[in-house]
Structure formats: C-alpha cells, structure tokens
Image (cartoon, rainbow over all chains, first blue to last red; front, side, top):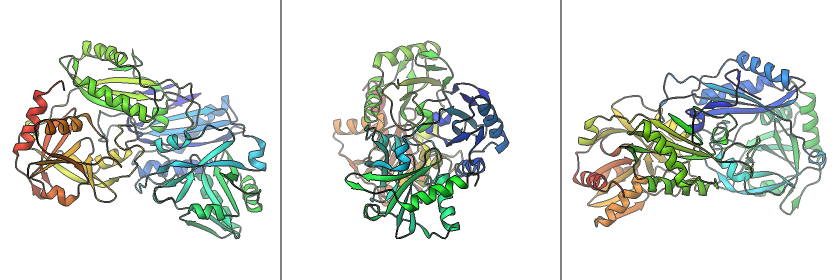
Length: 271
Length: 271
C-alpha cells in the first residue's frame, strides 16, 4: 500500500519535481511488530537530507500517523518514505509555492538466505563509478541512476551486492549498503565527503564501535585495503549486517568482529 | 494537459522508477502551429538516451499520436516528454517486467523579453559544479539535482541563466542551455564527454556552422576562454538563441556571428 500525503493512493502528480528532476529524498527501513525500527534516527536523517536540499520536511508526527496506518495493515514490512519538493511550473527554478509531497509505501519484508548471515555473501566489484559531487554527497536523494547502472552489471543470484568505487578507485559503498573493513582490530569505513549515502546503520556501527572501545576510522579506502582486510561487512536498515565472504577469487571466513557488531546492533534495537 | 501512456491523466504511479531513482529521460521542445518543431531530431535523441540507459523507447508514431492529441488542444505550447523505465519491485535491480511509462505534457509557451534577443542576456556563474560522470554525460536523464541547485543560486529576474562548470573549472553549459563561444571567426562549444546534456540545438548549430564554412571546435573551455570570447551565446529548443550580454562585470555587444547563427536556425526550421 502507498499513502500519498496521508491518503491511500497509487499515484503522484505527473508534474512532481521528484519525477522531473529527482528533486527529493528517501528512507527505507523495517516496520517490525507494527513499530518503525529506529524511527528517530530515520526521521533525523530525513530531516537533515531535506534541509540540505532546502525542502521543508513534514513534522515527525505527520509521518508517525502514516506509519500507524501502514502498521494497521502490515505490521511487518519494509517502509519506504519519499519526500519531494512537490510540483512547480516547468523549469529548474524552485517556486515558493511548491508544497512538499510525501509518499509512504509498504513492501513485503525480503527473506534473505540464512547463509548470507552465517557464511556471508559474494559481492561483485562494479565497473560503474560514483561521480564526486560534494554538494550532494551523503544525502539519500532521488538521483540514483549510478546505483541503477551499477546494479545492472550482474544478474547472478549468487551475487548479493556490488561494491562501487569513485573515479579515483576509492571504494565507497555497496549499491544499497554501507561498507566496513576490519584490520588488526581497527574498524574502517569509507569517507563519504564526495559521494555515497551516509546510512543510519553506518552511523550506528561507528557509535557502537566507539562505545565498545573498538578504534574506528573514516578514511579513503583502496582496493588494496579491501583485499588486505581481515573482515569486510555491509550494512543497511533492511539487510542488517552481511559479511563479505567472496569478492572475485578472494575469500574470507566468517569473522569475530562482524559477528560482534551484529550482536551489538541486535541488542541495541532502539538506539 | 498531461497524457500518461496516451491517456489524459495528471498522475503516475507512486512506485514508478522515474520518481524513485530518476530512472528515465526527457525532452522539451515547442509545438508551433500544431507541429512539434524538429520532431525527428527530438525523437532521435530520446531514442538514443533511452538506449544508453537500456530503456525500451516507445515507437515514434506512439508519441506522434500523443502530440496530435495535445495539438488539438494547444497548437502553440511547450511539450515535455518523459520516458521512465516504469515500475518494479523495490530495489535498484531492473526487472524484465518493467514496462516503460511515457508522460507527454503541455505547458504555456514562455514569453521572453524582446531585449533577450536584441541586446542579449545577463548570466550568473554558478558555484554549484557538475560532477564528472562519463557513463551519463550527454544524456538528458531525470537526475537533475545539480541543475536545481545551480538554478537556486539566483533570484534576480534580470539574470536569465547560470553557467555551470565542472570541478576542474571547465565551463560546460547553462543550467538549461548549451553554450557557444566565438573568437576570431571560430565557433567553440564545450566538450560534454564527462558531464552536461547534448541538446538538439547544439547539434544543429554545429551542423549549420560546418555547412556554412565556419570552423567549429568541441573542446574544453576555461573561464579565461569565456572572458576572451568575441561573442558568447546560449541555445536550447525553447529559447532559441540568446547572446550573453553580461557576466558579472564583463559585457559584450550584440555580435554578428550570433545573429547569423540565429538567422540560419530560423531559416532551417525543419532541419
């Protein structure tokens, strides 16, 4: 089901700037037992991303009412929220009259194979690159053709995710996930100052590492760094944590730090 | 009015990938006396852009029927065509079942001040940059947040357009136009191999210059090149040709080559 501005509807305006220009932002997360998981974090990111694009984000309770309606129908599902700048006259100029449009949609919770969590996943190194755009880096906006192109590089169902680099061969993220490396007990995640999306789970993993005295760094990550890592794992709000078991011919065994991070995330459900 | 897949409607699916990811392309052009101006060129670009994104472009006659419906209501207007990849399950993966969606919309023809054509226009040099993304460069796709951000840099109605550079200070285009420079009788337009949109009017100007023995070059253009130009002009399918009369404190007089190009464009209406 979809709610558009709070009303059940499958339709948005054909003149919406979200369609015309990708002029909006989104979040994707789970509803579990009728509750939006980590809602306050999701809303904080939604608000910050709207602010970065100078879109006026609806209040938290507006979304909470939508989520309650969804929960009444689907207590366990994946929710996607889109906020667009709304409609305007033709042209790039932002009109003071544009009223933001919100779309809240429920999709079935995906069932991933159990071995994704036990042994880990096989990943592909994408040829498509992320362009460096500091003005949009980190924001979960609706301009996602790079991710679409990268995801179209493989159809092998044994490959769970693709890793994306920037034009200078820095590894940035997965097509739908954030990436972490562990080496010698130090956790590392790519710097997203020039491209990539700064997800809620990435923020949580960094916090949980620091709370638990695991040194963590945000830095540039090379392919050599990847191949030299003791453990690699991918996170997002829908999948949780997937360790990377294989990248081309290189393989990794299930590692203790990834398992530890997953336990911490599971036990800190509301934080 | 809007036609969505040929049916008069103001709505597209809230699950359309055009909204979710900007997964689609567009064209904007004039309908004049009921006829789509340079339709064969617009359709050729639409088809090429769809092909670049592996979207199956509807046949020309499908759009021609839509345009005839629009022309019956508005014989002189601006038409925008959007083709999206259509709807799919949540996620970046492209589904074989996605059926492209076409939106054909009419908007009133804009009335630009006469002095835009006689004396030229004032332009702003945008601080927002275009990211280098060779996989998407030249394509008129729906990921246009960079243009939206750049256009939001000015509200002075005396400024008609903003010029955009890439991160290396190469001048690429206007927010909604392609750019030409003339110096010493040679025409130059920025190389769009890494960013920018290759418009129909740009293609026509290059062809008309070459047909008329005006040497033309596609190359990188620096701000110094801009300031040293004898004439600068902007083109697109809606505005036609605007000479640049002022950029910050630098000014230019109306020049003979811009006027000549405009005459050639006007006299080659169907080519």
